[in-house]
Image (cartoon, rainbow, N blue to C red; front, side):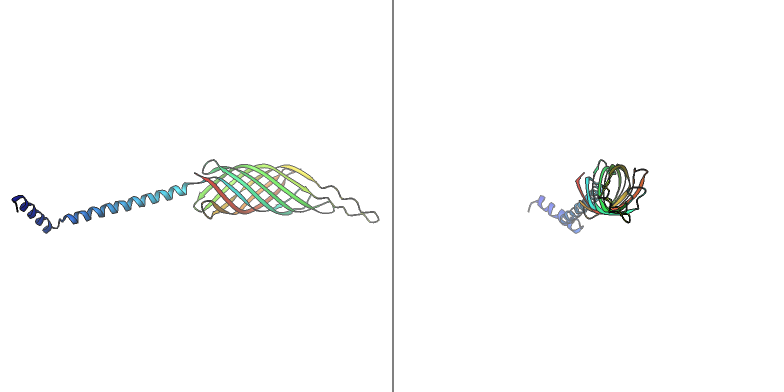
Length: 226
């Protein structure tokens, strides 16, 4: 054994006795790296969750059921219709979009001396504002467009001693309409939501105005996330 080798051996022995083993130093460094790696993963997870919550769809398509309490004309009795609802919304910004709303309702209305079958259609367009909070989206909208209604033949009762009169032709009219209301959607996943309800007040400019209320519910499909 040379003198240099003896000195190196004595130095290593003193280090081991003092508790500063090279193996211990390596273990300490590994623990620090592992802790740093855990912190980095935690931060990336938080950032990804925040970004996911900040995402919103470019468009939404709605389809479902529609119920309305409506009055065709001021002199007619209020009637109830059941039918379908459809709509599409283009989200220009996270909280602002343009909405198209189409609905069809079917029922009966008292005209003349009896009931006639009624068909009512609404075509409305306008801006929508949406608040997005986790699983729930709440929105309000102000829409304008037109309402079209038509009926079957209008029955007439015969006078005593006279033959039964011919029924009057059905009516068909189109008027300016508005839609003021809002909706609440509950997310099932990123692309599918349930519209718990959509409630609208719909004034129609007949002569004079008539005032209608409509309730809808159904399924919402989302697409084009950004």
